[in-house]
Structures are given as structure tokens and as C-alpha cells.
Length: 490
Image (cartoon, rainbow, N blue to C red; front, side, top):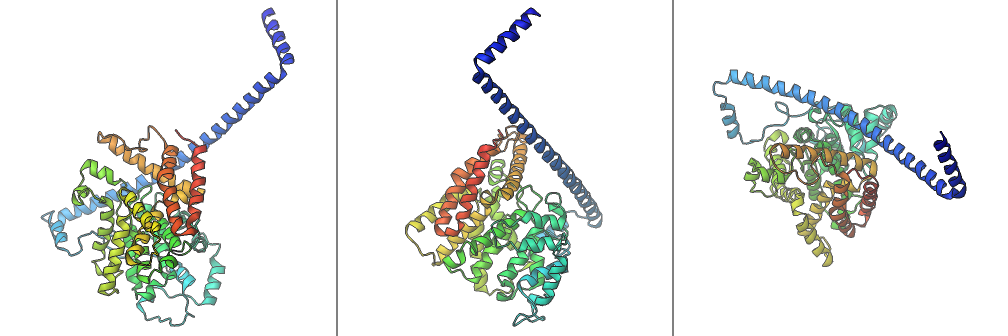
């Protein structure tokens, strides 16, 4: 007791003799306590997010298991019907369209006709001069008059489906257009529903809206039913990957539109309607049939696709060739109304744009653009226009780093999930995990900061030199980089 009393008296004396020292210690202790409280709060938020993610994964696993059982039953039925199991495969090989229809035995998803009427009537109406309800461009959906559309908008603006999509489309010309809200309105969720979007998803809606906004149906006399078949099949051809899914395609489609319009590319390069059609077509299909693993994985594992495409732009070749194989089927041939010359020009642009999204060729395209900018090219020649369009799709493909933070963080979480899944596959095959793909060594912040420093920001600055209005992407990317500098996950 004496020793205790002596220690307390000594401590009291020290506090009176050196008050600032003890005040500093008290302040430091409070700051440490506040830091621990913040860390605890962040961990609770992270725990909640992980629980929600696990619940979504469980839903997706259940849906995938159900689909697997359906395929097994179909396979058993086929085995009973066909004496030679390979006969169907041989028959398919003789089919001029070798790609299996992603919709299986359908040509179009069931769609909400009222929803399509609302979308279509946003850009065209019955009062429009030259409207012809017998035309193939109005084969499926009859638009409202201006007064009818106003009445319908007032009636449905608070509806969780129609109202959400109408308000989202009000922002389709803006940098913060949100495909997540469109996807959730249509399917109730933006994770588990991706492989099974029976009524369509964000890509279906965004494509339909933009093709009417640019009046491409009328300019190229596109059959509306075939267009709906095509976008249904393309959307179904995207897998339920965490990142490379149909929502990503919808997002890239929107950003491509933004670069063309508010970004100023149409005006800067005096783009023709054919090139606008090519750009939107390319954006919609640019990751079609993506398996959720990158080119390097295919090359390391010597996959069939790597062998087929000789290790060069493996996935990009898959995306574009698969879609052109698909449109050999007349039911999906959205380009059927084009003349031979128009078809050839559109295909040339589409192939160049999609192949340019191979990040292995990034340095090559950046160098080409740098040379043309230094030469003060007017970008009015055909080759320069195609280069500019290729750069636009490349930018749209990695644009989430330069989007508003709320949207960016949703995408960064999805890309890290997909990276970790590839890392798991590499580990299971006895291969070294690719950089930033090892979930046992999380480094999202480090990976994102490096990507933005060395790829994104210099690239966006180069695009901004051609299109000053795209400077918004650089500012957003700088802000997102600052976020990770303050929230290191390592």
C-alpha cells in the first residue's frame, strides 16, 4: 500500500510539474482511441458488405446449380433421342452459323412493351413528321404522342421500374449515368441476376435508348424486331462474371456515347452515321462471351483460344468474331439493311475498335495517337477517324477509374473480385498468381494507384488533348487515386 501511495504521489507531482507533457499524452491517447473507433466502424461496414456479398454469391450459386440441372436433363433427353451423341455436333458444324444461340431455342427475350414504348417515345413520337407505322423500324413498338408521353411520364415517374429507368435515361448524356440503378430496377439485383436476365438488363435498355436517340433505326432502316433479337442475344452472350458482364458492356456503351456527344468526338472528327453506328455496335459487343480470365491466363495455360488466335489479342478476337458469326443468322442480323460497301466499312471499324481494347497493345495505340497529335493532324482523314474511335472505346473500357467516386468504387470492387477468382484458378493449377490477383495478399489500393498513375491518368490526359471536354475524367481519376491513398487495404 505504501508503495502504491508513493507511486501515485510521484505521478501527481510529475503531472503538476510537467502538465504539457501529460496533456500531450492524454491528447495522443484520445486520438488513438478515435482512430481505433474509426477502424472498428470501418471493419463493421466491411463485415456487413462481406455478408451481403456472401448472400448474393449464395443466390448466384443456387441459380447456377439450377441451370446445371436443366442442362443435365437436356443432355439426358438428347442421349435418349439421338443414337449417336455426336450427331448433333456434326449437324451444328454443317450449319452456316456455327455459334450456338446464347438464347438457346429463342430469338428474343420476353420484354416489357410498355417500357420500350416509354423509352422510344422519349426520342420519337407519333406527332413526328414522316412517322410510318408500317415501317420495319416501328414493327414492334408504337410510340406515344407528345401529350400521351407526358401523361404516361406523370403517371409512372414514381414507379420503381418505369420511373427509375426514365429518370436514369434523363442522365444518359451525363458523366454520372448509373447502369447499376437500371440493372436493379429490371432484375431486383445487380449481381445474382446477371446470368439470367429474362426480361433484359442495363445493356438492353441502354442500347435501345441510344439507337433511337441517334435515330439509327431510321437512318439505316433497321428492322426493330431483328434489333431486339440481336441485343437480346448479345446480352445473353455475356457471362455472369463479377466485372466483365453485360452491365460493363452497358457502361462502356454509355461512356462511348458520352465521348461521341458531349466529349465532342463527332464534331471534332466529323463522324458519319456509319461510324456512329460502328462505335455503338463495338461498345455493346466489345467483351461478348468473356470468360472472366484474361489473355495472359489463356496463353500460360495454352488454352484452345490461345492456340486458335496464336496468342495474339485472344479474347478480343473471340469477342468480335463470335458476334459476326452470330449475325450470319438472319434473325440476329442487325446489319442486314446495309449495302455491301456499308457493311464492309462498318466491319472494318468494328474490328479495329474491339481489337484495340487489348491492353497488351496499349503502348502501341498511345504512341500512334501521340505522333498524330504532335503532327497536329486534323483527324478528318479516314485512318485518323478510326484511330480516334479506337481510342474512344479504349477509354470507355477503362473509364470507371475516371468516373464519380460512388460509381467507381462499385466497379473497383467487382474487378478485384474477378481478379481474385483468376488468382484462385492459377493457384489451383500450380501457377503463380498474377500481380494483384492473390486474395491472400490483398492490395487493391496499391494496384489501383499504380494503374491510374501509369496507365489511366496519362491516357486520359492524352485524350483530353484531342477532346478538351473529357478533362472531367482526369479530375475524377485524381480524386479516386486520393481515396486509395487514404484507404490502403494492404
